[in-house]
Amino acid sequence: MKKKTKILIADDHSLIRNGLLQVLESNSELEIIEAENGKNALLLIQSEKPDIAILDIEMPEMSGFEVAEKVKYQGLAIDLIFLTMLNDETMFNKAMDIGVKGYVLKENTVSEISNCVEKVLGGNYYISPSLSGFLIRRNDNSASSATHKSGLHLLTASEKKILNLVSEMMTSQEIAQELNISIKTVQNHRSNICSKLELSGTHALLKYAMEVTKTL
Amino acid sequence: MKKKTKILIADDHSLIRNGLLQVLESNSELEIIEAENGKNALLLIQSEKPDIAILDIEMPEMSGFEVAEKVKYQGLAIDLIFLTMLNDETMFNKAMDIGVKGYVLKENTVSEISNCVEKVLGGNYYISPSLSGFLIRRNDNSASSATHKSGLHLLTASEKKILNLVSEMMTSQEIAQELNISIKTVQNHRSNICSKLELSGTHALLKYAMEVTKTL
DNA sequence: AAATATATAGGTAATTATACCTATGTATTA
DNA sequence: TAATACATAGGTATAATTACCTATATATTT
Image (tube, rainbow over all chains, first blue to last red; front, side, top):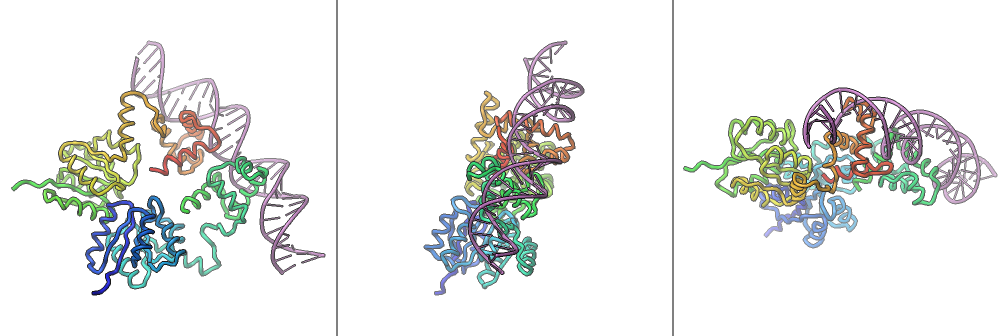
C-alpha cells in the first residue's frame, strides 16, 4: 500500500479550510490534516510530519511566517506554501528568502491552489501570476548590486534602534529620554536615516518605520 | 412539487463561494446561484429573484453594500446577509440602518453561515456573536447616551471622513486637497476630534486613527 | 599614521500638528 | 422664533519633524 502524501492546511477561517479541503480531497492521493492557528500548525508539522504545509500568513497565536521561520530553523523536511489575502511585496520577498516554495493569493481561483500543490509536490515553485511583478523585480535586484527594498541594511545599530522606537510613534524627546542621549542626537539620527533611505516628506520616516515593522 | 428556496451567493473569491456552496448544498431544500461581483449579484437578484442573498461586502465592480442600497431602493422582496472579513462598526451600523437581516464575519465558523441562513429564512435576524458589542452599543445609543470604547460615535460624518484620511498618514495639506476644502478646516476638524476623544500629545490623533483602523 | 565610519551634540530654517481663539452660513431641534 | 449642532475658514502660539550645516571623540580600517 502506497503511502499517501500528507498535507497540512493551516488557516483560522474555517470557511477557507473547508474550501481547500474540498478542492484537495478530490485527489485521493492526499491525506489532509488541519490547524486553525499557527501554534497548532507548528505542533502538527512536528508530530505529523506532513509533506506540505499550506499556511495562511495572517493567523492568530503565530503567523504563517513565524511558523515558516521556526520550521526552517529546525531544519524540518517540509515544503511550504503561503496562502494570503495581501499581496505585500515585503512579505513576498521575506517568504522567498526563507525558502517558501509556493505563494498564492486568496483572491486567485481555486484551481490555482491545486496547481500550486501539484507543482510543489513535483519539486517546483509556484507563484501566483499576480505576483510575477514582485518576482521580476526581485531578480532584477539580485542581478545588480543588492538594493534591498527595505534598505534596513544601510542603517547602523543606533539608527536601527531609533527606527524601532520611531515605529512605536515615540517623539524624539521621548526617545532621547529612553536612551539617555540628547534630543539633538536623536534628531540627527532620524535625519540621517531619512537621507540614507532617501525618504522625504512630513512623516516619511514614521510611515516607513511602521511599514517595515508591521510585517515583522 | 414544492418550490425550493433560492439563495444567491455573491463573493469574488471562488474559494469562499466553494466553501459556502458546500455548506449550503447539504440542505437539499435550497437552490443556489452564484455571482462573482456586485454588479452580477444585482442583475441576478433582479432576474432570478432569490429569497436570500449572501453578499460579500468587499467585491469588485460594486460592493455588497452598494448592492444592498440599490435592492432596498428598488423595494425588492429579498432578505440580505452580509458576509465580510472586516468587523467595521460603521459598516455594521450602516448595514443595520439599511435593513440587512444577517451579518456574519468570515472568521466565524462555517456553521454560523447555515445558522444565519436558517434564522433569516425563519424571519429572524442573525448577527455574529463577535459583533454583539456593536449591537449592544447601538441599542445603548438609541436609549441612553453611553460612552463608546472607541469614541467613534462622538464624531460627525466629516470628522470620521478626515479621521480615515489621517489614518492613511496624510497631512492636513493633502487631506485639504483631497476634499477640496481649506487646510484650516482640516486642522480644525483634527483639533476638534482630539478634544472630543480627549487625545493630547504630538501624534495622538495619528496614533489613535491607526489603532482604530488597523483592527477593522 | 592617516583615513573612514560612527555616536554624540549644537545651530538654523521650513513645514506640520496640536491647542487654543473667533466667526459665518446652514440645517435641525426645542 | 430661539437655540443648537455642524461645516467651513481664519488667527495665534507651541512643540515636533524634516533638512540642511558644523564639530568632537572614539573605534576601525587601510
